[in-house]
Image (cartoon, one colour):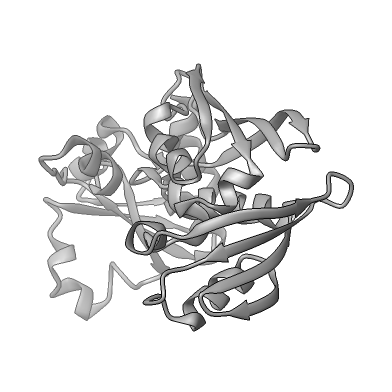
Length: 272
């Protein structure tokens, strides 16, 4: 068996985005513990969480903690991609990125505000937005010279001169010469190139010649968008309604439910 702790009193932040992303609201599940951890535990009885003006407990009689974990997760962004067109000869792609965790009514749709600054970091161009998608042009040559590729604002602190020595549309391999400021430490440059999938041909500071394959650049871009742009939309995806929370509070802030009963009562934000 397992016990789920729910918020009864709304937690509120002044900033509306931070409030939606970080505040526990009435009916939000907070955590799950083994049977007897909340009700019946002397330490629990002495804690602030025992204040039933702020919290209530649902004792799930036939489920383990592990079986219920998915129901206390945040509602997060989840992006996917579609390459609309590709020109291998120039290393240019037209890409559409869209949100998959959108509710029935359209909550948490993809917008240009979500990814615009990120796309600018990668020197994407022709950025435009439609319903739940953002379309843009992604150039391998622009990307490999971008702040997004090099990270840590390296190109702002230390302007680097890039020369495309060669590019094969067949293999997707480009050879690039980068001339960096003398003040930029060599180990930083070599680490950046290797971390991003490049192979150093020569490194005579301040001039570095390296090869990189287009799939490595695209892989870095995709990994970066997940890390940088996919964020929490709402503090919880699953919840009990305020009316349900009030009903449990009226019964003393503690009820028992089977897993089936609880799941029938829990709402999924994606259905809103």
